[in-house]
Length: 456
Image (cartoon, rainbow, N blue to C red):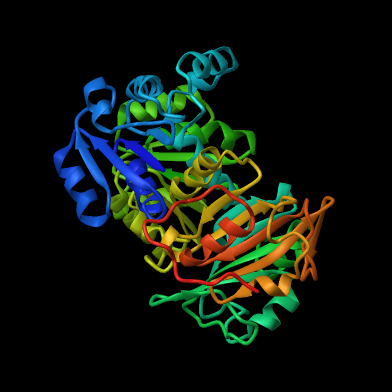
């Protein structure tokens, strides 16, 4: 199965990082140096040129098993690329579209029809969703609703004073109602056992039923609700975020040195406060932080966003977020002083995999990078090897079933698996292939078979 990724900027590079583990990748871009960086880091074919040029697409050798992802920074190029790709035989096309007008009811359906799009997305809108989730769960570095909203996957960074430090996984799960599915340190990561003890510098992923979230919230001090937000810098994410923020009744202050962006923000949302200046200026930042309780750095530079967030944290702001494009900065263990790194890559990958596998009820969510592992939600079909088996037969160091969703009920520690269940599982990268075969999920084809044996 071939995946053609057109554009190797921040979004395209993220997709290559995740998908090259499982697919034959062809990357197209006009920037030779960008293609050199990709080919030196990943086992992919590269083609230099414009993806909207038929002569370039012809070199990709597309067929009915090909998928085309148009993710350049230009909407028009992505649309033309997807349209032409169907003429060359591609079966599924995905377009990145950042112009909000394309998603209006008047245009979205005709656009998909005439350009033969199977799926389109806005990375700015995805980043906004991540920011809003981070505001709802300020003590988490990642938050994802799962199982039709019955549960959440949450990532939590340990601090020396966190009440879980020094406790076993079994004690934490018993007191919080959360099932831990991954422990990460600076050196490694693993699916936890009940006797593992958390350290002061660990990060964890866990699954919690929405009914147990108040219990988890009580463990973390949420008394200072985030109402006053300082936005640092202006990027397209800002203008996607502002309407949602004001709908929530948040007080927004914008600090930016770009006069045009300040004017555009004031026209879009007249109620916000504006401060003109460099958002990485320590003196100006310290002045702007008065009466703020949350800082979101969303300028065009990763380095400035991270630096400004760290400075804000050093000035006493407890809740800081930095929007980033570099996937390798995504880990919560990467930078101290930034509570949450906002990156659209994992969510976009999850949605695209739904389209590639053509199963809306089966998806894979990368946990801080596909190399760290994944969370899998999948439907157990009658022909599946899992139907009618014991859950204990599907527990191993490389994968584990966390819960079942059956008849609108979330079931922890189930004994058996039945056809019609939705399973929630966690797996290391080499563990995915087990679920692929057992669940009759479409193949995420690997270049070499992963060494494993199916459970008896």
